[in-house]
Length: 67
Image 1 (tube, rainbow, N blue to C red):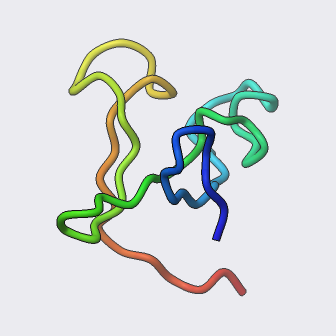
Image 2 (cartoon, rainbow, N blue to C red; image 1 turned 180 degrees about the vertical axis):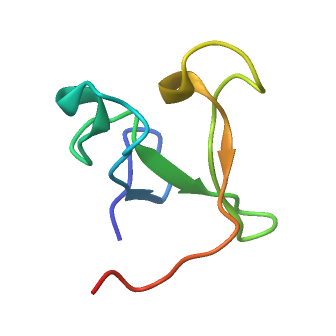
């Protein structure tokens, strides 16, 4: 599992919610889901419900295999 510079576990994701290819790529450091050490839930820190979609907070509700 990868870790960031603060030692947090994360998983990268592709964001189809943007038309800017470089912002949507899974190589963009902003496109990371972090694991909450207390609950085990995955989330992306950000703003609650305003601003650009690429800057918003996400909580992962489901993970499925990409075939």
